[in-house]
Image (cartoon, rainbow, N blue to C red; front, side, top):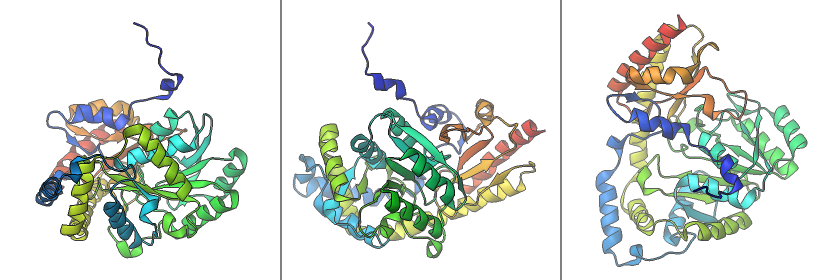
Length: 394
């Protein structure tokens, strides 16, 4: 039968990372491909106790719930954000099924066909998937290791009149960089001047290797709560499987997103919400995050040493100050997308950089995840990868 699909399915695409994971999660492949936390660090006992408490403390956790999410949980999240200088009322926080749903719901209420979104190049590929599905046009802004460059950003705001500027300014995916305080201030200044909404995606913000040196969140800088929509998640600091994230920002935007969520799934999983509330009340999450930070910093340093020791002319990278990734650039003649199947045959995997680009797609880049492998596996995996890259480079 020939099915009459909606026109918008022309803009749907599969995630390159998800497709890669189907392959590399088989056999003995050492994978640096997925943006995965280490399951050995999951607080299993605390999560078990929290779910047990959620289910046995009356039947509320098993009932339908309000679309915005459990009020007590939103209050807890408001308190945690306040420690970062982000001052939000629980009524302006919406619990979502991971921060990925937050991006989708925001797009649903904000974008018409043909609307313009400005972003960095490269940027988070699953956000690009969402934006494409709503038939928007994404325009890249010139950037360096400190963030978007002011002259190009202002020029493109004037030329394209964007509906939104999407950024991952803290440990960006895929580049792992941190925007400078000056660039953050510049972005907010231009957003206010030209009345453009910023979406600040912050899934990795808690994984800081040097918390004292971190600049302010854009949401913390938006004192009038007019321009910045902020989303985050517990997937990187607790467990991904709970599928809990949140979105906050201007009241009118969050109200419309709540209505869109009613149409999408009524509300986020109640049991997970109640469990997370008990976890936040009964468990020292901050101490757990410190363990994650120190463990991941050690693994980052192991991978950095391996990259430094690789005798490949033209190999460059930016040292991460947190997050989960190295972004590696190699000589332009190297096509890493074509190299990936050979790498998998040699029992090591990475993500080619090409899918992260809006345009001017560079085939000689790759993203490496350092959080999901032990130091010993990182050593062995990088040995295999370096040998392969060296043979191709020669």
